Amino acid sequence: MEINRIFEKVKEVIEESCGIDADSIQLDDTLFDDLGIDSIDMVDILFELESEYDIELKISDLEKRSEEELEGRPYEIDGVLTKEGLESLKRNMTEVDENLFVEGLTVHQLMKLFTVHSLCKLVIFQIDKKEAA
Picture 1 (cartoon, rainbow, N blue to C red):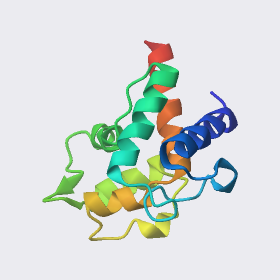
Picture 2 (picture 1 turned 90 degrees about the vertical axis):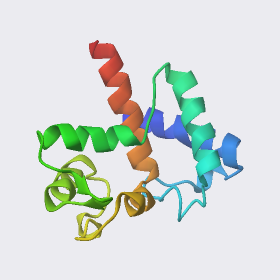
Picture 3 (picture 1 turned 30 degrees about the vertical axis):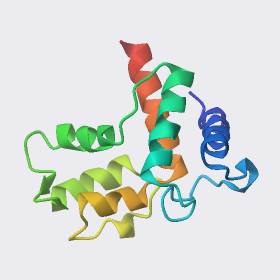
Picture 4 (picture 1 turned 180 degrees about the vertical axis):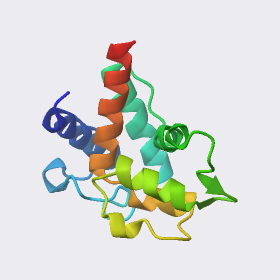
């Protein structure tokens, strides 16, 4: 699935859900800080994208992918990402500046790094997973 088509749909959904002008949305915008999306808006955005593509979206799927990659080694301990967890996220979230994956980063803080591009990649991952099934 081509990222540009997904990006156009994601921008449209964000505009409809949050009132943010689609033309002002960039791939590298963070959802929570740059765009000011809150958790209620995020639920609506995920629901609309799920309906559009007939997929199930969970932000936690990104964490699950990293946990599976670590094959039993801890991804986080008491909400703080482990060194191995950070390295896995760097590999899976290449759209985010790797220098932001610092020791002491919590699972909660990780969400602040989530970009429009991250959301697009999550949609593509779930579409590809559905098509492979």
